[in-house]
Length: 116
Length: 115
Image: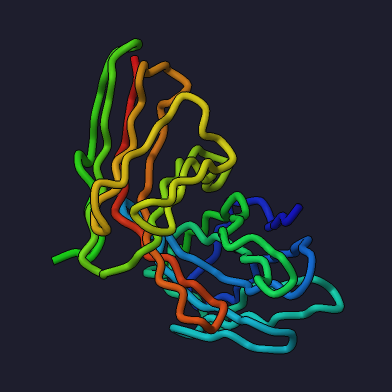
């Protein structure tokens, strides 16, 4: 079945540091890939997404590239801010045309803390 | 006003009690979902509904039931709560755009504690 593995946290960085959160997946067909973010005390919200190989999703300075050859969707940001402190979830949605599930499968989440 | 609302936001109850968590949405989406979040486990799907007449079990449906009263309302019930159901519960909605992306929109969560 479909699955997502993301690096375990917590991750603690200083402001303006470079961020990478690794995410790899296992899926049949051609899944869509997502990063969701959960700020303290809130629900999850979509950060970025990519629907096919080599697509790059980007938002708020975050980027992730859909790499089919390495089955990865790593999240990066060049210079983090204190306000980026949150839990980040990688997620996958199977490709419908290949009989994939329409449900999202989430990784376990990575907690990021950015210190001033 | 929030597009996806959940009530209550916090609830403490005792083992054996029946509990209902409610979710309402104003996004006009047909699809609704219930997840639970546990530390270190991410989000796990409990039930989902693709329209009012369609209810499906997720990966951890045992001990839970749902009711889709209308397009906008999807309730989760714990018939006889037990301590290992202590968790953060999220409702979500989605509207397949036909483009295969199906972004989900989450409510703020309900923190449930079963003593």
